[in-house]
Length: 377
Image 1: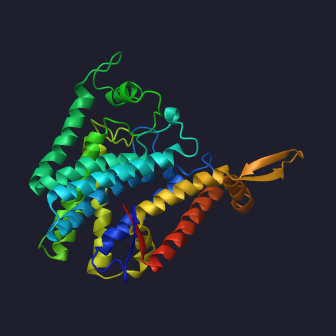
Image 2 (image 1 turned 30 degrees about the vertical axis):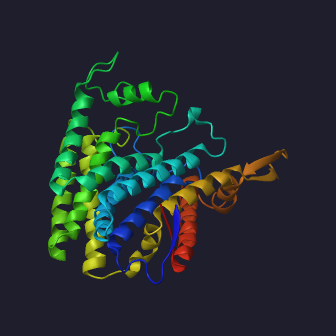
């Protein structure tokens, strides 16, 4: 990991709408990952239990989609400066390993007992997907990437519907009896069930590749209006197609189902299109500044906020309960109870805590932004 110090604005040579969309996604991550109490969360801020989706289920695929878009801007720029594809591949491998290691540091903290931890948690999964998708973006032409994205979507669908699971048969999509779960039971038995798992890495590649194809559109010689029009058309086609696919292969984040890939990519295209139209075409930029602040330091914002949240849970404040018995309360729980739950209903207090925590990290990232400090891997 390196800390880059730049002079002037970091957005002069960047697509500001992409930074803004990335920042919206990171803000969403912080918001849904940090409620005051996990027992009191609005349904929209929770993941769907199985089939279906909530706004929370859009956050992770949006980030992977953005990774793909960013590759299409970053890789050609590096090649244009004289970097070889082999050197670019080394960069992709290094970055993937760094993301995986950061994820393991975060996941294992504080005891680093991985017998009950998520090996493929968020950063680890991003690292693995970045590695394989990055290789494809480096060496495959856009048309080949399009073919590969369709191939992975179709392959995953065929595997999930046709490969029999011992004791259940083929085509079962219920929790516990599907191929996705069976593969996890064989490969990573002993770790938590609720991660997206191993087999669903296959369609995750398509999420990144669809982002890469969007980046190709944004880098094309088409006029800005033509670009945004195509984004809206293709985005809505993707959402409708994903909704139709849902009939046979339900939208499901944990499975990272084929319908989920197409639907969320379409949704991401629409939202990126809105950002592009507002910021890069109409030049309405002031509203986006807080999101750009998050968007230019995404890994730092996610890693530091997640790590600090765990540290807060370990920090204890001594006190007494209603019966006079001395107790030790975690700092996070104490802040939630005394600053929010003391005056708001439990579910609102939980949401207000999440908002306050997100704003606190916006402040931290703003300081880095103003000092031109951008943490890169």
